[in-house]
Image (cartoon, rainbow, N blue to C red; front, top):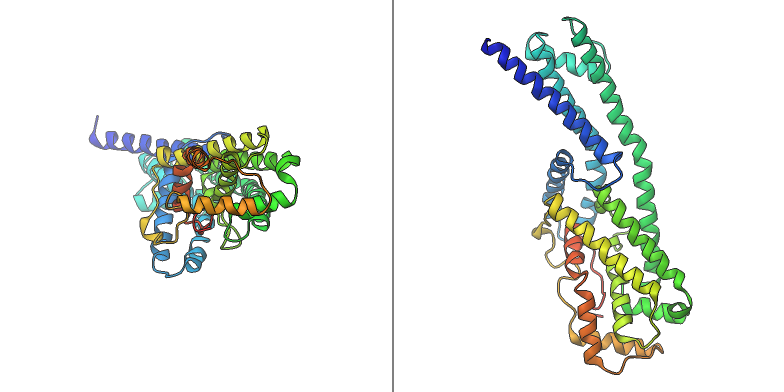
Length: 356
């Protein structure tokens, strides 16, 4: 067996393998209803992200960085089918070369012509090559159709997420403040008589856990307003629940506890997806004092928050030390994940319990 035949056989197998890998990446990205790490997509998203990070680090203000990074997710999403089509073109170029369709340049023209359904250059070596040409055209259309058909799903998930973020801003202010949120809830009579509010937030967390791991690019879609972020909104809700549970002398709420558990699980699962499956890390050059929740709350801030809650008529638990220890213990369930996601998405600052 000649070396030329061995080489062509290896190129043929490599080309077919690349076709399978590309098609598998598309199916796992948009069809398979579970969170899986797609290596090819991860490479593209990280490359595009670091380009945008590099541009964003040259801006001096958070507003400037927000405008730059707002384009990252849409550009990465549009680049995805281009990346897939490029891989298909490379793969089929090798396949046509292995089938003796001529030089590499001619095989590339055949591949590009088949992929884009131009028909300018076609195979000439028989039925197998012609069938592969038609299969490349079909796969190219399939990949484009997959992305186009799933764009409405992506933007529907984004819209539902941002609806809660915007409504929370009306109650907690900008930047979000836990004490402002709890004061509003107390004045509206929602702390004891409105479990539907905690249920809506619980459903919001459950949907984030599902959508932001099965479609991880959603995590980087930024809110329409620079001061908003789904990450800081999640932090305000969880801090409010922790502060209420630890410091306010009210009957327990199963709906609030379920919301808190759902929020901790959602942030933890998204956090672990990026760190363990995608091996993604934040860029420290982007924070530069702009990342929220970089420190644990100070005891003085906690006491100030208790004073504000007392001023709005909420009954406080008498043991401030025990309340402080319980609050810190509750916050440990989500602080690491919240900090990581805030840094990864370059979220805006939130008051939370820091500098209230």
